[in-house]
Length: 208
Image (cartoon, rainbow, N blue to C red; front, side, top):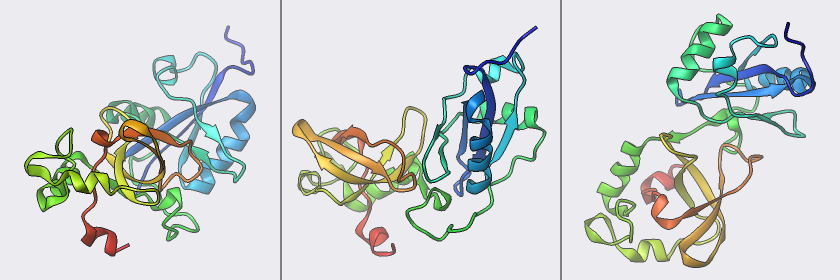
């Protein structure tokens, strides 16, 4: 018989963003109620799991993080895993609804995602981002040299993920930039090398 403890993975929070990217994370027993509140606030789903239930799903999920604002950091997951979560919870696989404040460009509810194909499209318009050294036919290395604190670029959270808008918070040596994902203002900052970034065409930036 499985008995719940404070280290038991007890709640799954999941949902799709406006770009239909799948997000899901798991929370421990002491955080269940707060995480359920965060799910409601963010317009996402939550599903309580009993000790030992669906361990093949639960153990593959990244741990979520609760913020003082009442929201939570819910990372991306692969589509196959997300489909299994939806089936387990018995809900329809649909985009998450907008919550209050969805028009705030700095809120997670206003997710604006790009795909690797979109990044390639920007490069085709002469903005670089296609070559490791910033040179070649994709664009001028001057474009990379001009990147500075405050600029918005495209960056991926990890392997197999799309590219999302991120603001440069700090520049470091050897072409390393410290970034904050625009749609996850409370998430930890990440470091990315210049060759891991995509550039946004000025026409797109002018629309924002």
